Amino acid sequence: MAEDGQSPAVIVAPTVVVAGTWTTDGSPDSATAAVLGFLGGLAAEVWGANLGPHRDQPGLADALGEVARSVGASAVVLPSGAGSESLAGLVAARERGTVSLDTRAIAATADGLTIRRPSYGGAFDVEILIPPTHLLVATLDTPAADHCDPVAPQGMLALEVRPGDTELIEQVEDSHELSITGAGRIVAGGRGVGGPEGFAELAILAEALDAALGASRPPCDAGWVPGRYQVGITGARVAPDLYVAVGISGSVQHRAGMQSSRTVVAVNNDPEAPMLDYADLAVVGDWREVVAGMIDELGAREAATKGADRCG
Amino acid sequence: MRVIVTMKQVLDPEAPPSLLAVAPCGFEVSGRGVGPRLDPYSMHALAAALELRNAGHPVHIHVVGVGPSPSRNLYLWALASGADRVSLLDTVSDPVAFGDAWATASLLDALIRTVAPEGFDLVLCGRRAADTNAGAVGAALAALLEVPVLSLARSVQVDRAAGDNSGRVVVDQLSDIGANRLACPMPAVVTVSHEVGEVESVPFAKVVEAKKMPFEVLSRSDVCGSGILDPMPATPTLLGMHARDDRRSCELIADPDSREAGRILARRIRGN
Image (cartoon, rainbow over all chains, first blue to last red; front, side, top):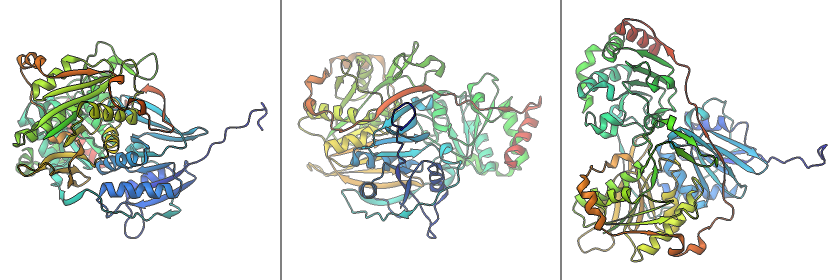
């Protein structure tokens, strides 16, 4: 009994299933390790489930729901990524649970789990209480998942994936150099780049940095680059180690797509551009000169022709 | 082929963040001088439906939406762009909690069963909503409609022979390495990503003409199943909303020679 006569609140640490990818030697890949680290101080029990070879998402969702129920899990947590976003929605739908994408925090309370996740493209956070009877299915925001030492699951749960209505016809692997999704480095241009010629210059820089080429919405709308380059609410959501934003003002719409980047570099001729507030490193100046200096330093002029070809 | 497209009205996501704030109730966001627009994610769903028509399928596009005080003018734009009918459920008198995907999906389920009793071949949804960012309604709606769901499609095609009433839908679903080409029988729900394309802009005259097209706004008592709209034994509770400050501590590389500043920047990046 507490001194005020009230019973102290009982906080029950949850049982969590981490659905991720483990290598053949049983160690988690980096994204899964990050989730395990994030849960280190939170969960009473952590179980692993290896998604590795499975691609039948409805069947996988059913199997995950079954194993979550078998251990009495309060939450299923997945690393971030396009595949996880899709799978999380399916698991939550099948288990009548709550899906939380890009979750920034999870805490155990006497009333259940509280989560904090973004809304309005990340301009606002919402806090939600998940009752104990309810399954949380969450993906984690990259920075939230990436700063703790991983804990070892106390066991791995076997997923029995049964075929359903969905047929996997084939897997299509995109050309690495054109894909911003999953890229470790991205060089992106905005309206300030001025036109397709500017993107040809950025392509040389991207080549030198071994980066994918991206764009904010205006260059895509203007047809300077294909729509698949677009980062933002209406484009791709990315979380590279390095994001170089050239001539991008920094609207909510664009930042929603890239704010999980580990290091953000801004190059802009406008010292008042909002993007500078959301960058770790910046240069204010003529972007053409700045990019030319970067290319010179990186010794990449010889790659110019190859780089320019990437801008189609 | 009957295609239903779910479309939502949201605060304009292109608005400067300084104009948005948490409303006094603490559970919504309001915008100072910021108007509503159709959710960009929803517009991709409409684009996917129009693309099916462009591919030669005889597609009837029925736009449905749930939310408080829908703007007729916004949805007229969907009709002008190629939709054939709009049916909306106004929840102004009985609002859904922000981000309650199951409640939203339940209302969409009831609305679809009411306004499309003949059924459908496809329901197309955006992968998320620009306001809630929840990403859960499409899968929840499929569960309630008891049809399969294919999510995060960057392309949508229909495999159906002439005169065939069934057929299947084939999508390229975004994956971490590219895409999974998946197929399932119709009827089905498909959520789409931005890669499916954009809806082309239409002249204002077409929007005016669209006023003659089928357009209905229903209330909650009009839709079937309204007595069983809460299938959840316990629902998540929205505790609050907070504006974020994601500003970083920016180090400015100051050199009057921009080219030299670029060289310094490259060395810093290489050093990392």
